[in-house]
Length: 170
Image 1 (spheres, rainbow, N blue to C red):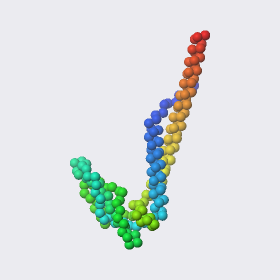
Image 2: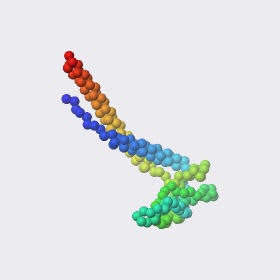
Image 3: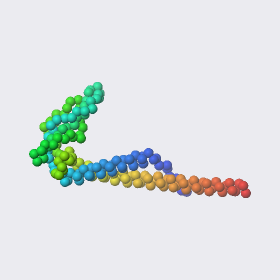
Image 4: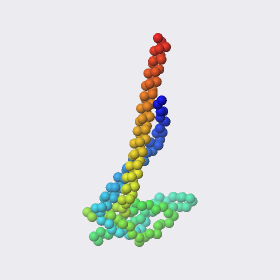
């Protein structure tokens, strides 16, 4: 007697596909950012101020989003940039005067990356993406087998049904 396959749930498969796409995009971004900084020059940038935005209330306290304003010097020229890192607080951060590493393009110091996406993050994302892809392929093949089995059973049932109708008429 043939073993009946259980009906696979498609929702986890959709979630796995979306997770795989997300980790793939993250892996590509981290890899490109990591590779890009290899040809860039590192410089220490100093936090000189903060940019405040998006005032709102959280837990009955008025909070703001703050971004560091950094300055770095290349060949005697000072460049001022706003960090993409966001801090939410009731008061401005107290890190003025602290330094952060900025990588800039030697041909165009206006082209910069704040910090460096580490190789470890890149490796973790690639491994996670590969794992998600393997599970997605496995679950997809399981769904395809289930659908083929279901189609085969339906065609057998239709063949048996038409034979019984033929026998009843005769």
